[in-house]
Image 1 (cartoon, one colour):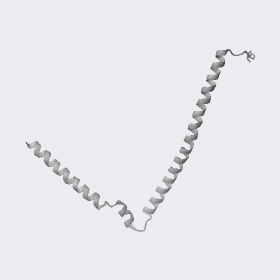
Image 2: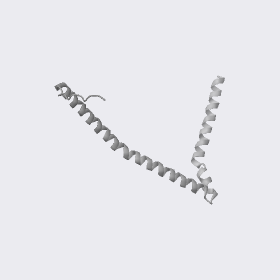
Image 3: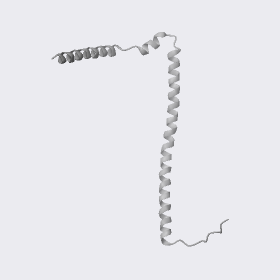
Length: 107
């Protein structure tokens, strides 16, 4: 067991160092507290949103697969007329570009 340390008075420099250290620690704890106060509600909201998202996805999948109407599922996967027309246009453009490349290579 160590003998009790002698209590000595702090020098002026040690007192200043202690005050600076105290101020730095207080400032650090204010920053940490503000960060925690800011982060906790965000974390709670994120957990709630993820839970709700999972529940909504589960209900949507159930409604799709348990639907008595087979057209419900095929209607969701059906390609719209606009998308089909745009895809056909792009295919035509690609064919024209390939033909142009082959003509340029022949020159």
